[in-house]
Structures are given as C-alpha cells and as structure tokens.
Length: 449
Ligand SMILES: [Fe+2]
Ligand SMILES: [Fe+2]
Image (cartoon, rainbow, N blue to C red; front, side, top):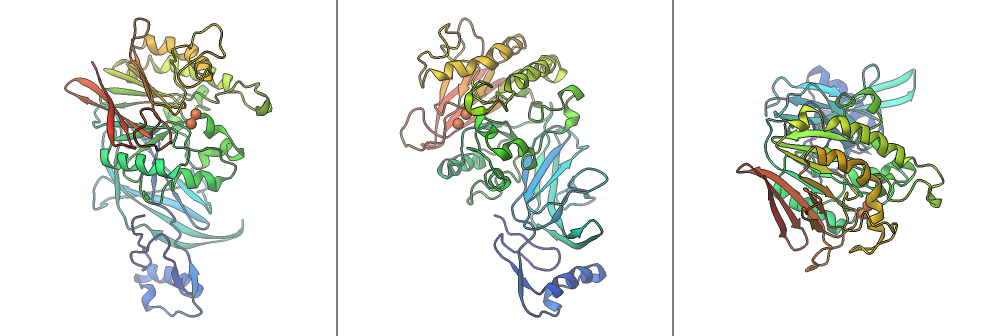
C-alpha cells in the first residue's frame, strides 16, 4: 500500500504503522490543529497507547461512468469518510464530498463509500481520501475527533463518447492469490481506462469482512490496484452466494441511480457506458442453477431479475449512447453462446467443458440475444467456465463470443489460465486481445470494423 500520511502530524505512515500516542495527546492534537497546526511531536505524551491509522486501505474506484464515480476504502474504526476532488493535480479549488447521502452522513467502522457526482465526461480529476474519526456512544453523545488524510493524490478520467483509451475485462479470480497477482500485474502494465470485473470475484460471502478482503484489498502486492484505474463490477453466480451477498453493495456500491429510470431502480449493476466509439453494455446473468434448485431453498428469483434486465436492455439498445456507437460490446458472466445451446436434449449435451455449460447459457441467451443482435452487437465477453475460448462469428451469428480463462495457474496450459481481455480502437477498428497472464502471451487478437 502506498505510504499514508496524516494531516494531524504523523508523516508517511504505512498501513500497519500505528500512531503510538496517548489518548489525551490524540484528542488534544486535533484541537491544536484547528488552532494553528501544532504537531504531535510538540505535544505532551503520556502512557503510550496504540491508535491504528483510521484509513486502512488505498481507495478503490467503483462504477466508472460519464458523470459520477464511486470511491471506497477500508477504515479501522467509526469514521465518516470523504473525498476531496479537484480538476488540478495540486488540488486547487478542491471540493469535499462525504460518505452517505444528504441529511445524515454515513458512519461505519469498516468501510467508507463516497459517490462523486456532477462530473464532466471525458475529464481527468485528481482526488485524495480522508476520514473523520467519530466517537459514537449514542444518539446524544457523539464527537468528531478530527480528520485523518491519506497523503497520496490519485487521479481518474471519466468515461464518455469523447473519452479514449482501452477497456479490460477480468473474470473468475475466486480470491485465488496467485491468479490475482498475475491479473492485477497485467492490468497495471496495460493501464486501461476502465476495467470490468466480470464476476466470481468471490466464492461466497457470509460476512462483510470477507467481501472487503476480496474487493477492497484483494492482494497485498497490489494495494492500490484500483486507486487510479476505475473499475466496474458485475456479479457472477458465486458473488450471489452467502448471507452477506444480499448486501454486497455495502462494499461495492450500486451504480448511481441517476443512470436509470425508476422502474429499473433495482438494477444496480447494469450499465451502458461509452468509451469513445465503443458502447459497453453490462448485464448480470444471475445464478447458474434454476430458481427451484433444491439447495436454493426458494429464496432466489433470478428469472424475474433476468426479465427486468430484458426490459432494461430493450430500452438501452435504443438509447443514443448505444445507437451512435460504432462498436458494441456486451459483458456478462455466463456466456450467451455455446455450440450446443439450442440442443433439444438440454440440459445435458457434450460441450467442451461439460454438458451443463450449454444449459446454463439458455436463460439469458433466449432473452437477450435477439435484442443484442438487432442492435448490431460485435462482441460478448463472458467467463464462468474457467476455460478460455473464442467462438468466432458463423453463418447464424454475426458476433464473437469470448470466454475468459479462470483462476488456475498452470504454465503452458492452452485454455485454463487467468486472463485479461483487452479492447481498444485503432485505425478505425476495434482491436480485441486475450492475454494469458500465466505465460504472459497474447493468445488471441481480432479486429472488428
Ligand atoms: Fe467461476
Ligand atoms: Fe461462474
């Protein structure tokens, strides 16, 4: 993690560096700052007590968009997090935005989430994070003990039709550290404008801390993995599993409701966003088993979820954002094509991994393919099977289906490898590459025009 520094006088602290100060000294230090910036070094210190840094992770940019950006970071105690954002690298004219909505700010002892709004499309911003330490005893007894600031200044660029750069898609990392190391290192090298984490980041999440570990601090070698690289997130089937999975937005916030109309309010993950000439369309395929699957205890309604997304997609593909895009790319966890997907004997079949894959394709393929095909989709990028494959267009299908690899790290394996799917416009064509992160090779490159 990049070094943290604290506005109240403790310079260049690391994540695990604690402030060895007295309780009296800490509270006094905040008050002294307001009176003229007296540092801890000059204060009386007695009976040393370790106070962990309030900011406990680098920021994670969540939900890249034209006009908004989410920022999340871990905290070590009750805190109200905030972001200062500026159009200038020296943070001139910065405005501060607190976590939570209007009225009451959010106070949480694990995570701060801040939504930045009213941004300009295709515009670079600089930002830093901070948090107010809150001592909360009850609704009438609470104190704001002052701010701590991460001394690092980060930046991001919003999306939009005037934006440029590349997009990358990762999938099925399943909290496997060797795979995450390879994938995050490849992303750091490619420096895309936006990354879509296309599901199965988790195996299951029973507790909030698990989701924080996986999504906010996924690998100790890559502490600022999403501090300067905006991400989007789409659930895979595994991300729907576990008690806390029902509240995953408390760790990876839903997209800004302003992006969608009221009747689609529940579709917190779906997106249509432009990156230059490319329209990126995000869909959630849901669980990979039927709603009446015995172990699901009748507490899933994925078919209704898919139906609502179908209505949303019908409107999305008619929007100017999609209609005026030269290239159209859909991203969803479970593929929308499999060679046997229309096999009348389904479920079953004899696909390259196992017969279930063809059957899993059907619920979303029947709903969404007609709409995507009418819109002139060029490419669908998925995951789920943990085997890389590229289904090139054929006489019945004018679009490509790419399936990313999984989380197995076996040098020399031709399909089972952690992958990064990269796309960018060059010379009037959309160039798409699949990177094998184990062997650091490009295993597929195709141009769309
Ligand atoms: Fe998976
Ligand atoms: Fe999956």
